[in-house]
Amino acid sequence: MTDTVAVDSPPLDHRLQGVYDTLQRRNPGEKEFHQAVHEVLEILVPVVARRPEYIDAKLLERICEPERQIIFRVPWSDDSGEVHVNRGYRVEFNSALGPYKGGLRFHPNVSASIVKFLGFEQIFKNALTGMPIGGGKGGADFDPKGRSDAEIMRFCQSFMTELQRHIGEYTDVPAGDIGVGERELGYLFGQYKRINNRYESGVLTGKGIGWGGARVRKEATGYGTAYFVGEMLAATGSSLDGRDVVVSGSGNVAIYAAEKVQQLGGRVVACSDSTGVVHDPDGIDVALLKQVKEVERARLTVYAERRGGRARHEDGASVWHVPCTVALPCATQNELDGDAAKALIDNGVVAVAEGANMPCTPDAVRAFRAAGIAFGPGKAANAGGVATSALEMQQNASRDRWSFEHTEERLVQIMRDIHADCYATADEYGMPGDYVAGANIAGFVRVADAMLALGLV
Ligand code: NDP
Ligand code: 2IT
Image 1 (tube, rainbow, N blue to C red):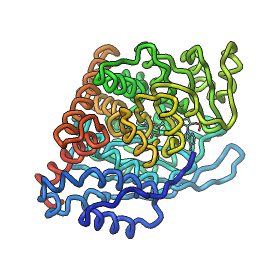
Image 2: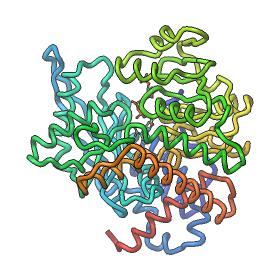
Image 3: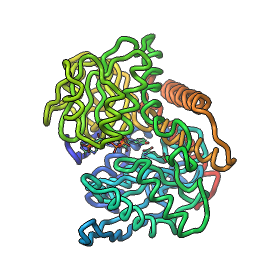
């Protein structure tokens, strides 16, 4: 797995190349951000040919520049009294469609580049959901691994003490991402409430069910990814039934992708974490995986030991070498490179959908598209999480709570609509079956048209 990837993609047309050159000059060394923008610009060549007003209004230059970027100090003390200083970020990227919306990530490799790439992708993903949400992202270079509950709480309180002045139900609505789940959101919400003296439920999503959270939000990203890949397979007259599926990661997205894949008739034969792979040919026991990862916060080795039978843990192995016909990368950016894509193609993969954000390198995406593999980019395939966050905002605003069944029905319909939108847009632009083209064009056009309507702001 590589953390950064040099962009070696095909040349852009000269107007788009100018936008990209400026972006590189303004954001030196921010490789992930460059990569995410390049992936969009590459697809927009036919769009700007049809819609020259986007060029005249400098829409691309405007969309690549965040509306606001906040970087702040996060001091906290550990259980032994030692003081630490981390760096916090919130990039409020685009509010043409609604309040900034996107997760917070706590991971040691969080940087301006990581937050900007995520915030940039979030704009188009959120547009694809059809919900009234703009794009943003945040986080800190804090490593939660091995930290006590009390340390996590103090860190979250310090982080929110600064963040709270920048967010609000109508302004910017954070949620979880890597290293930020219900526990962290609880401490963050508690501190927001204390400082502002407002029970403003709609300021954060992914909250616990008992204090303003929405049913299905925890499951939504993974479930949505499974539904999306199901739709891609259905479009080719196939389904998940009886398929061997590989899911990378073993966090929030991976666990619930695995759960829904198995409910839809597939068998998840492997998952992973940052240290290794579990190969479980009889199908991952999702209840055990939840116990080990969500309840005990233990390593995957514990899963393999308790599962017994044919389950094996292998340190340092690549999950992409486990034979499968469907692959769902659900861990982190650039975790699936060109070599991994080749191994998957050689093993007969027919569909790949990104549960994570930008998990496939540009080389891998090119390999899948060239081989005619159905490939669902994260902007579309993992949009179920943020879409259900928007449903949480809706419930908070109306002081209502919906049943699990009703909320899941909404999620299923949203994923079907996103799939249909991507499919139809790819067709319209003469690239049938190309979900990368469909997702990027459909998302971009929705945001660009709103920006045109709102004037030069
Ligand atoms: P979690 O923190 O719950 O889980 C992350 C998983 O990915 C863990 O298994 C972790 O392994 C692995 N991982 C994280 N960073 C690395 C790394 N640098 N190298 C190798 N493995 C790594 O996060 P989520 O499941 O919430 O997020 C996973 C992906 O999905 C991210 O790309 C996120 O942006 C994206 N996403 C999340 C959404 C959400 O609602 N949570 C919505 C849409 C997308 P280990 O425990 O060993 O670190
Ligand atoms: O990448 C993502 O879409 C998320 N981490 C979820 C964002 C949200 O606001 O629910």
